[in-house]
Length: 433
Image 1 (spheres, one colour):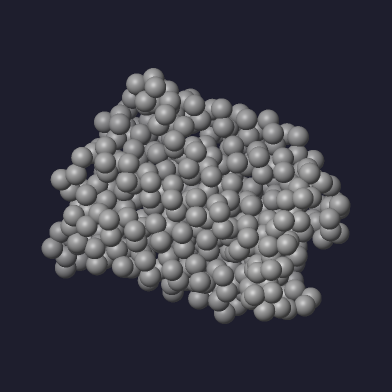
Image 2 (image 1 turned 180 degrees about the vertical axis):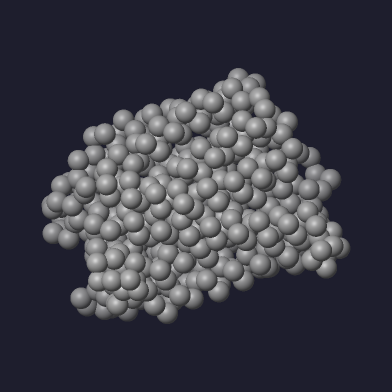
């Protein structure tokens, strides 16, 4: 594929098209997952319900969607690898997420069950598509450029998601300026905008990103059989891939802390008495700072080493956690939002790039299935741990302090990851920096 800049650059049409899917689906991650759905679910769809019941239902919805992907992602990845079907699977899941998100517009006040059902299905679509999106990085660039390309995706995601989120926030604050009757109409319209944004900006990947082709293409049924055998084979040989296993365990721990902060930050701020508008502003700060910071971390990975970049991010998260436990003022919440924005995209993009170097090319979707599986386990266990410690101690600050275990534990395990240039299972492994 001819480069836009020169033959030496890492940026070409395939890379940009691939990265724009991050721009597309991050609208769901920011506007729906982190922003409007939790607030709207409590104030509109569950109005009049007990607060504890609302929290329980929302927690079950997040856990259920995560567990579905945990159970299915590795096998679906193996099937996609066998049949050269990564793009097909990506768009099946993405379309499910897009349609279910758009349908949230139709859910009326008090219809919490319909809202939570659509939310679970949309989240499954969002997370399922990411398994195959991550795996496509193997075929669009050389391994020495994984850091930069992965960072470009996250950077565009922060920018795109932030821009749409800013528009949606403006609609809720000034609905009459947009011809709307109130904030509730603005939030409902936001779900339609997210679905439209997600669909439109997914098209470049559909048209321009080439599917890595397996030597012998097989049908769906045979792909399922071969995929299941491949999955079993990976389990049998996981001990031989010690560097992959160690990294996955390290990633599980520290990304658990990262995801928990993302999901629990608004709730934690509310528990400390901060205004909801202040919390929304902090989310916007994180998004727009995350755009240039993710790109910078891509260069850090290439210059100083991917593992070094991950360690820098872990260190910042440890400091953020310790400061957050002692936080008393809204301005401190803004400072922490800036700090998180500086490293959140970096730790995600470098982790994806580091892992991509260690895995066999012909099993990329399967291995990224395991990668995403552990990330989704984090979305189940991390928030539960914070809540459990908070309930036992009666202090939400101690619940957040427990995240230090995850960041420190992940950093320690990462130290022992020593990727080799050749796997005992395949000669297609990539050397690590």
